Image (cartoon, rainbow, N blue to C red; front, top):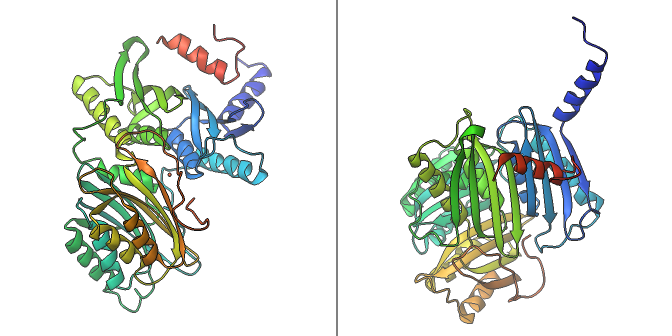
Length: 438
């Protein structure tokens, strides 16, 4: 039997639906920028897209996720890190377009961890895991200073008495001294009393890798009551429905989808809404082999991992944002001041850019009372020398958004952290594919 010529149009439609497309609309909403992503459906593409937007320091205030056997469609409502609508800057819009297309066409879920290697300079990446303790990061920087290591970047999370860190150092004299890397690893293992492993500079995204390094640890027993995770099964539809309600914060959606992806669950449909400092997320998922979350034991595991993933990145303590000209021992000096004044670093991110150290530390006193006096701030400024120090408000041990509201130093230079049928109809309406969801 010969098919009519309309088959060509059908093939064109299938090809068009499976060809990644990005549409950016800055006029439809007065408060957000609307971005639509159309692509072929494959495991991990949702995480790649959200990761790309997070890396651009954009916030997702609303999202609609819908997919079929072969296609996938996302709608994101975006704001900048100050919760303002994006400007019509062609460079920014082009960057969003290119980043999402790259995410949709990526053949794997790994990207080089920033920062990229400098010209003619290679990097060595190390993964560190250990039990957390006061002064741990100070001791780590002291060892690196003693060994004359040139630091390119550091990212550290602490959670539930555990520490995970990604460290990048320049291979300045490794060729002339082939044993130096082994000496560094041995010294670091001794000082942190934990594990240090060399890894590729092209391993998975840094935040995702930190989640993975901390995932084996036991979930916190003090998960805030404001984090609600429930799971229901729609057996006839072969979906498990995950509902999450908690305080909103930057990169919340990334952390949730990261946990689900690493647990081998695929999001087929979903909605994300924020209302002030509250977030509500709903996902229709199946495991990668097409099954729902069938047992109570597996439900408990998913709930615990999601709660832990949400809490793990919650910023705790006082935010110190430092920008200063690099010098030998700068990070060791700054963190030593914090340690000597009874302060612990709960989270840290350090980057070296053109001989300038840009870093963010969240610090807390050992008792967890968030007591950081002005004397400590002045001592940190003194150790920094020429540079700027921004002091943010204290972030309690909750999951709400925070704002930097006090400038404790001079100048700028800051571092730039239901029923299924109705559900699908509502998604298609939000995507603009039908005129009514009723």
